[in-house]
Image (cartoon, rainbow over all chains, first blue to last red; front, top):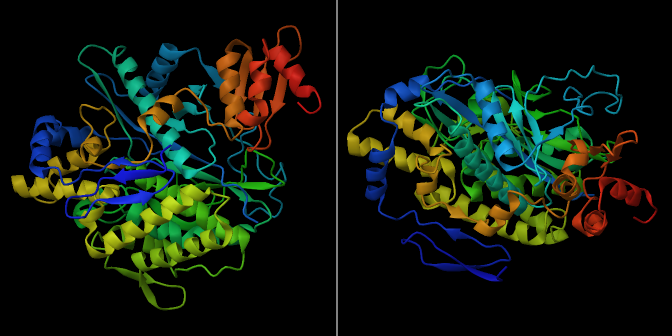
Length: 61
Length: 499
């Protein structure tokens, strides 16, 4: 594993490097939230009310 | 003295069949059988040594006659080549990761468990009637007062009195939700209306009624006393943690496990360490959860009041001091260093602007989606669409799951996760379990956390004990397994001195 890794930070923060034996990646929360909301509009369960009502689980541990 | 923090995560997934009869027990069995049938023949998990009613507070915790073992019926119960247990628990599919030696590994095998569940859904979907759909969620409640757990387990030195274990973790279990909570629309606290809380930090906090206790399904305690070490009980405890939320964020899983492991280690190394103490932990866990502004103060044991984040700063300092004094060997030096960086970054972020940690903290990431969606569509706080987003954040189907679209940081690589679907961790006895199942599947009759039973043909069945979670590692047994052509040869080789 690489000794030094780049960690993507939200744009409002400067990009920083963390010294670590462990690798991190991803992290792009400042990607346009509007795009994400558009996507939610597309993939959200069609009848939210029915879906939420029918989502019943048995209690577990 | 701190013992190596062998740990593991058990996740009960929510399950639902739409468009056909919704029986969660048969659906869970279908899910798991679809995977084990599709991928390989399954090896049964053997319950002989299970005794979930043994209590750490018992005067003689080692007395096997203190409680009658009462074994539940488990319809499907498989052990995988990665050392995990995949089974139907109550009415949920449950994935127990193999025992691992570090917080990073707990993330890797927890993520591998998610991928196995995804493959299971794909395989099971082909078996349900046309028009029916199988949904699986990595969450902890249905929003209607029914909860199911994501449990963690930590190896603890038996010589540490259980009261000290409780002191080590109580305030942490009440407050760690500020970085490890998965967020929830609405309230499920008994006696409160569903919309009494618009949005809360934890999935699970509404369900705790005791400070310390043995139960896991009713009157749930913050510190669980189940004393079932699944290893040499004269040397070790297994702290069974039931307060946690199932996390979609790898950083949250990592920090949840690493922080808990460090605090347990710090108290093992110094049992007299002064830990923050709260006056009413049960009340406090919901007070903290019900306030996503993080402004609420709870009663401390000394009569003052304190915010959850200030408790977390104190615990961060304790863990940091322990790491600086000991090098963090019990948890792993690199894991401790990374965990302290995330811990400090996240607490600072939560203090100044929680939105800055939306890449790491599930409740913040989910809150961001829900707030923005409500604003766009002018929705009220108890709108069904917002509750649907809450559920769908945890949907395991890639095409539907929202957590995977939130830009969460990852700390396990795709290669590590992919490998961990079929390969066991190398530094615990899970290596022996997983590798034996891979190599000698037809000769392994049953496997348990602390033993394996081989059917060697004409001979009587042979049980190989695995009392020490730190033996059975790749270093100790890889050669002997690889050099044995049959299980019979393996059992004979293991019986030789100096293996």
